[in-house]
Image (cartoon, rainbow, N blue to C red; front, side, top):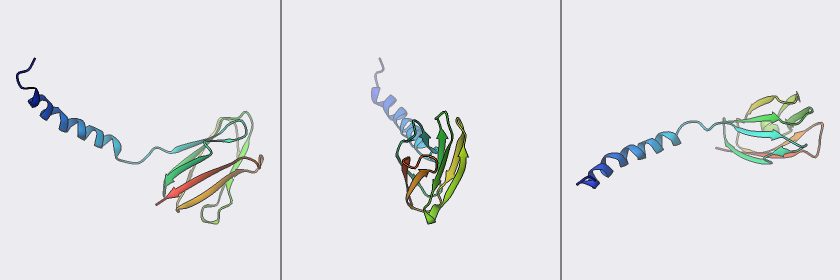
Length: 113
């Protein structure tokens, strides 16, 4: 037992706070949207301008992920099972994501400034 417990707390508390702050900064890791059971999982994600969404095909068959939005149009083409394709979103907005092969598959990517 220390005779001065406050001394230990004053010495370690600033280090703990700095450790938490260091871990919270920097770029976010990319969001992953999986194609599983002919649906997008999750069905909605939110990212910041300039960040990526990785589209991963977990189904045993191909998908063709695209967005028809004029502000952020993309089409990754046929995506084979087990593959991942990153897409960077450069402008803010809400973007519908679809599959050309399975038209009922839809997701939403919200991009904030």
